[in-house]
Image (cartoon, rainbow, N blue to C red; front, top):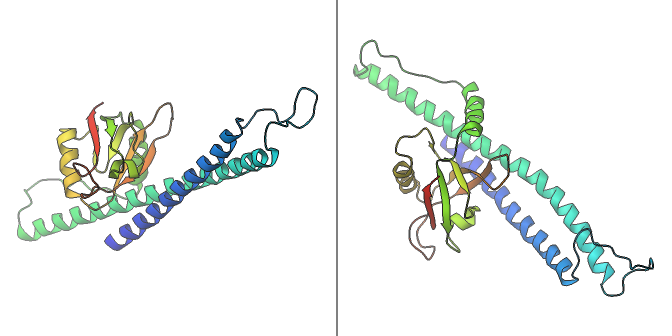
Length: 228
């Protein structure tokens, strides 16, 4: 189980790296357009119907074509990332359920399970229910600041992001921020799936955050989180 979860997380991290590379390529092409002082929709002919002489048409057309292609690649990649993160989350939930079941059986063998108690169990279909629950949860915290070169910046967190899910912490978790802090401490150098509301986007943005020291600043995250 743990190995499977690690493999899934590595796959998700590789996809996130591809996303960063695609974003860098798109920015480069956008910079090429900006160097010609045109955008994606500006006219390339003058008022007389001739090609504009004030811009390099080859640079502009190549950049536009590349941006369209890269944006399509980004859409496909984001779907893969979403699927990978769901798989990581599902595997983590399955592992948690397995450990709870082992603990319950151990308590039964030791005779420590209270008589008449009912142990709650969940099955794989609950994973789908949990995904739907996440989409309905309100944010419980907000990213107030993100330090350069920090784990939070590397994960893709930006100022203003509203945190809906932070690993095992969500709006239904008691003492959300202290629990979040403890969760971060327990996951040093280990990935955490974070899901945020960003701007006017209707879908949650899924990120992989790895708390660590030695990044050049204070704390394990490098961001300031406040109540939503």
